[in-house]
Image: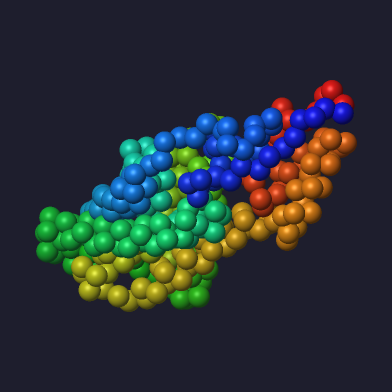
Length: 312
């Protein structure tokens, strides 16, 4: 049997594994793996928070400005609001996603954190930056819109549709946000989708379709920061907790589904790694299926395929 072996190389940046930072490697002794130069403290922690802050200024500004159009948009108001939010988030991810990951949403940050894509401490910085950026973006809207228009649209705050209960609105927000966060995780965070998807388009479409589906009923916020900034600036807090509970619950479910339903298989890494090494030598196909479900690495079936022994 070949003397090839598997080694588990931990990811140094706390993020999901990438093609250049694979968790599994063959014939690569510890200490000889080429390492990227360490990032500065500013690039690792401050710069991503600044990107989230600036992104929320833009997103909250566009999102609240477009609500002024709703009063005179006729039947097209919902389409206009959905397109404005969906296209804006897609553009922001294209422009700043390589800096911060392009969350621009505390619910997304929560889900990605649970999925293992970001360190919890950095996630806290993201949340603060997002809330601050949203307030500034909403303040710009108040400074620009005519007073009558601003009052008519309640400063861009969300509202529950006529006849919809609070519980129904929370459920709607949770389902829509779960769909959005799962789209983010599977298209932009999961290593299986690296280079195979177009995350900005997928995420933008998730926002757009969520607003088209739930806008008239729950407000389709899907984003506590988007709801928070306009509420602070306008002073309209009616049912505000709906757009915290629903989206955060949706993000929690999405992150939990990814982390535990897809990844969890055994509780202790030691026996699992021993078993995987044995299974790789004797039953490659079964090992590929097992490793694809393992919570201790994020390699894909395609990444494992070259490591199947053909010269046993």
